[in-house]
Length: 628
Image 1 (cartoon, rainbow, N blue to C red):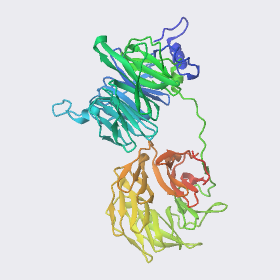
Image 2 (spheres, one colour):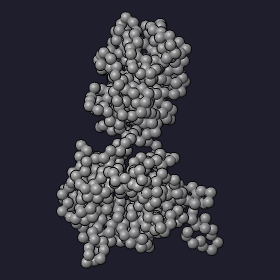
Image 3 (cartoon, rainbow, N blue to C red):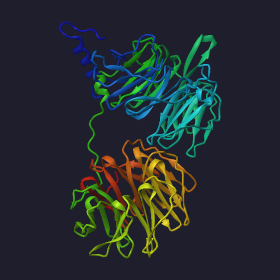
């Protein structure tokens, strides 16, 4: 603990240290700021800290013996600022990455992969033991040493024997590696390229097609770390053992324009362990407490006041950083640690969506555009709305029952919902068109014309109207079907419980495996080779004409609807006002300006987009709505 001055309490002095540490605006120049240990770290002299992560006012640090330390700024009952978390392993943890503090991944010895969901750590991979309780000699137990990910929520981990693992947002898969040399570093470039590096000058590059290639590096450095200086420019650090010098000598190598260049400096360096972007340059840590600041080919040694090996660098939201290492070391040059964890407040992001006046406060379940361009919405207590030139207006209610879906056949508007009833609107009155006489809810309608309309709902219900009457079709399931979409009478999809997807070929319905057990609530696609389905806990999958692939969204919100049009593009909506927009193959979050649940979306022929949901909410995104 920092020594208290006369008249000050240790608690006040500690608060002063933390408050001063995080104020990045008053930090001194990188070359002059001395580094010092962060007080009250819950690690001892026998602990090695290997890596960490910081964001949203929190810090996580991982190390030997399955150690995970967490700093939230809120002291516990004993007044401690750092919490040692419970984890399902005592194996060393070498790397940590994640998009948010409730979605972190740690990797380590014996192939250990741990996931943190914001509440608990769960072991996902590695640590396999045989019948005698010893670690099994299998590839899954290959030690992992580094992990990095991209903005889409994908991650790559690397380790011994050229091991490369890819996390697609839901599962881990091993990728073919062109080397058996031990890998110690991995980095993801914004353009989709991924790099890995390791012993004997090994540098690998993963192209956008997912294939790993070995770059021709003429140097034999043992790379331990790297940092991206640009999409195709790297700075690599590590070292080699030299017998005549009786130890390791640190080395820096730059990769630019397809060529490797060894950087030489007058002052010899020990083995380098980590490199991170820092204050318009690069921060470098290494053995024996060595700290350097690199910028424009100039290398300055920083005052570390430590002789312990430093293993990694954790960048903080303000641009400050922590260095972690041997003997439970956590160090920083920031004058105020707590302030450096809290990013400056950001201005609210403008939303291209506007709330429309709604004639109802009832929950809205569906929205549909008729062939001639008129939009309709439906919901609880028989609510049916029509969009006219002067806004939304309520139509007469078909009944007091909830209406979940609508479809315009070209010869009348159909509405369906509770108790298996289907109504038809002739422009002035509703009439019962079909009554199933069962307590089953119809959840979705879709059709090709007035003589061919399909309906799906509870307990595997599928109905077809052939122009003469409604008939029930065998579905082969008792699971609920929430959404229906088609292209013609021989190509339809219905999605439902536990990842169920049914496909209709004009004769029968059969299962179409997506690869998830999450409930699926919406399905849409412009072509048979470009289909999306959305569901529980941010589930989003894409079919490219050959196979389904789950796409990472990093969302905890349920996605309840998806739709698109050539003029508007594609959108998905969900709970807590969540809206996603598809742009160049990536689903991007778009501010909705609302926090209510959105249950359905319609992208119109003229480019307008409407989303409806709880409390009668109707949002509009005009064709000229700016991009978020």
